[in-house]
Image (cartoon, rainbow, N blue to C red):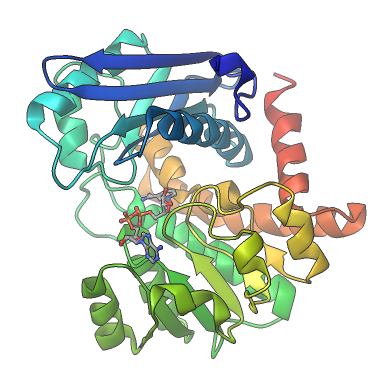
Length: 350
Ligand code: NAD
């Protein structure tokens, strides 16, 4: 099947495939739209079962970045890269350097960043062969910690602010005593748990690896839950912070939360899930709006802006979500539909 006929193809400006025989690197970069600026998006390394699965992911994720940048009011377009391989066993310095060559060949139309499976050290290896990288120029960190270029603290802070605004909108309360189920105790999920704990929320956490779950139980008095049980809990908020599509036909009837607000990209298995959530009275925080803290961080660090400007820009996620919720109510539409509409009003008219 041609890329142009692919179900996830959405008028993408460019899709490039890279194969490096020397290192075994197989990667795809997709540039969705550059109307507002050069495309920026993370590079994900994942043991995809097939190149078709990788293509599917990169097409969806790059489109999401265009919408994310537009809703975060950034002068950036949307792009994404995927490397086919297991980050735990198949990474090497040579492979990462070859990925840098690939990024360089895009001529600045795509700027890479971290994503699942890719760390700052990997981006530094890519930077040997290209200047079109981000996340390694960091001068400050939103939580005041050492500036290491990891966008996860900013993403977690944005998700926290967005979750707080969503609870306020849906339940009319602050976070004290609010029950939150978090799927995925990784870079973002764990930090989100920390913010929520500090604001009095009661946490239920899960992961397929037990280490961080145990730490969250110890540090945040969280309740550990088996991965498949996370959907059935009688909680106020479900926060997906693992991989995509956790809100799907199978889980929809099981989710009892009144709010879905988390970090994961592409949380809905299909866009039509948004309307089903609305019908069930569940307030859904559109994923690319609530998880934009990381890209806002990267943007400010690249523009040599200040920590205060970055922080207040991230805090703006709360207002953007509230605007979406109000408009969704006025126009009687799902929140994801309204968010898409607002983003398109920004990037298509440019
Ligand atoms: P991560 O890889 O550090 O954490 C993800 C965690 O989810 C891992 O601990 C993994 O073991 C766990 N997990 C995977 N499948 C699971 C399952 N079925 N049930 C329970 N746990 C499961 O990634 P991260 O950086 O924390 O990002 C989390 C999500 O947020 C991803 O979807 C990512 O694309 C998205 N996101 C991250 C950032 C960022 O700044 N890191 C920015 C925007 C969006």
